[in-house]
Length: 338
Image (cartoon, rainbow, N blue to C red; front, top):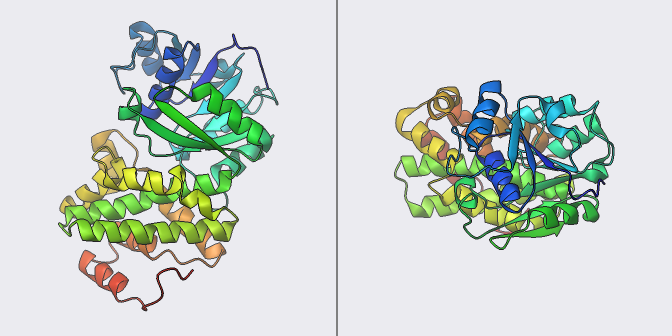
């Protein structure tokens, strides 16, 4: 790993979370090179020292932006990927030829390669090499709150615990408490799966089903997540930590949750994912995670009834009344049965 403490840190992705992390690093005295998708976005950040498109209150005085990935990572001692999940492989491919083999990489994007065959960390490792220098971060972290210094926590996971600890020390602040883990698989799957459950909870709220229903969906959603994590080789305890229960609570219950907000909008208006994303200029991560999750679950013989219900609802293949009845009429079983 590059131990030159004067070298900048690259943040790949200038959306809300990428901007929040760039601000966190910058406010802590780090120089940051921030990659934005469009040249005009990078130019605006450099001119204003703020991101006019996302979290414009953040002071980015020590941040320099570019829309060239190779330029962003050049000379950096660490790289943090903060693009939407479906954009991760594109930037990984652009980094592959120029990223030094000892540069640590942290993935903030949620969870699964769109093929559904593997977590993003495995897909990125296949492109840039060196899985031991890769880590993932997840937890109950809304960018809007993090960027204002509200108290928060997260978990950073890598197969090489030293890599997790490196990023733990780089990002920890007096308002941002970080824990290290050696279960990147479990953290990745939790991060992807909870977004789908949040859509289900949003749909329930939009239909005025009430708090009891939302609590039922969250709890049984956690059961789905835990089954999938354990079947794939992740750790049960990861599901009970910040990446599992913690992120599930905040994503399913918060007014900041774009997945929950989309679920409510779908329930009330029947709006498609594409139309909602165009309207709100934000990505509904859970909608893009559904098919990869189901494919992965089928490969491991795991049932995901809530996830499948959300898929069928969004596709227009079933009514809310019918899917509600189907979920409630499933065979009765012991609560803690796998």
